[in-house]
Amino acid sequence: MEILDILIIGAGPIGLNCALEAKKNNLNYLIIEKGTIVNSLYNYPLYMKFFSTADKLEIAEIPFISAAPKPGRQEALEYYQGITRQKNINIHLYEKVLKVSKNGKIFEIETSKSKYTAKNVIISTGFYDIPNLMNIPGENLEKVKHYYTEPYPYARQKIVVIGSSNSSVDAALETYRKGAEVTMIIRNSEISENVKYWVKPDIENRIAEGSIKAHFNAELIEIKEKTIIFKDKEGEIQEIENDFVLAMTGYLPDFDFLKNSGIDLQGECLNPVYNPETMETNIENLYLAGVVCGGKDTHLWFIENSRIHAEMIIRNILST
Image (cartoon, rainbow, N blue to C red; front, side, top):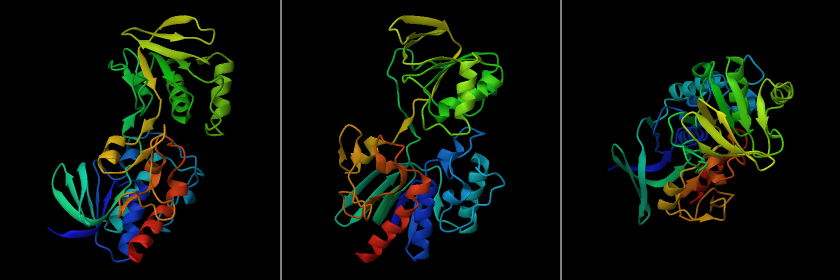
């Protein structure tokens, strides 16, 4: 069996950047991806706009040309998938990595389709795979959606949106404008400060005028077939009619996979142990890149500030 210099798990922007850096340094590499190229971006809402400008999303110094100041999902898909075609990146799609183990100095990687061996492994799996569950009765009902793509299925429906993050606000505004009756259930006392600055006034004005109902300092406690039950800011229990719940409660890395790979996880946020100068974990020659480095703090790392991980990792591999 061929022993790769590097096996990269995940074909998001940072995984692709690691591959390009490996290729530039004539290292034998392979990306394994359980879905399509930049799978997380593919699953983003159809009309999502990035907070960052196009130049902040570039990898390997390849220009990202965008007509708008803030590129959208489709432009990003064209950019990253175009790079994959243009640079002929070595990648296997729709293949899930099941297990990473180390036998001496060589990693053995088992997937849903095959087995591989490699001297180094980079885990760049992001965090968009596992919803951050509320763990309340009724959360498993079919009407509960942890992923939102577009507003059209919710026209003329009674929608409850959980949270006040960018994804929550986008879902609330888009479904409202397609004729949904929208109610937001928000744990905090106001819309998150992290909401995109050009969107925040819009949602605040819609709430102020009553077009979108919002219950602040509130907590959803049960979901039923035709209603939801929540506790309002006064601590009183309320029940309202409901057709769909959009639970925009965030997502988490696959901590079980990290743990089973031998990576130590620390603290309440399950922060993976790694050297911030090399991105090497407590397992020699096993590296982390991108959002997965932040544990539950998924807001710490994003494309703009983790593009440097690829160069750091490859530099360390070449030096050993």
